[in-house]
Image (cartoon, rainbow, N blue to C red; front, side, top):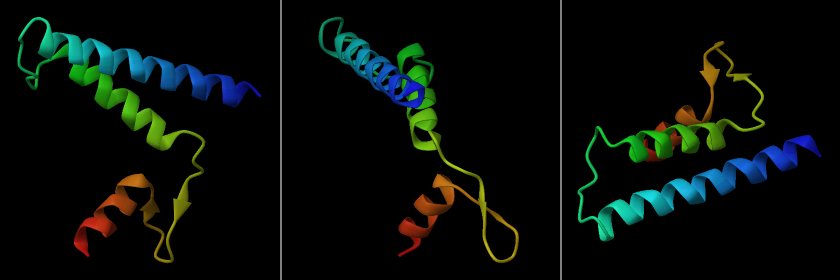
Length: 77
């Protein structure tokens, strides 16, 4: 149950960050730059969401497998 409430909180925070990012672009006519505080927060929240409730896995050779491994494999194909 605690994991569910934490997940809902993370998703709510993610929505709020996207809203702030959108407001900055549309209302204030500001471009999204690498140094944008909202963009950094969005990336951190997405990374946390991708890692949420994952157990550390290793492949046959002992190399760590995580969501980055999955994304890189998908991009190679």
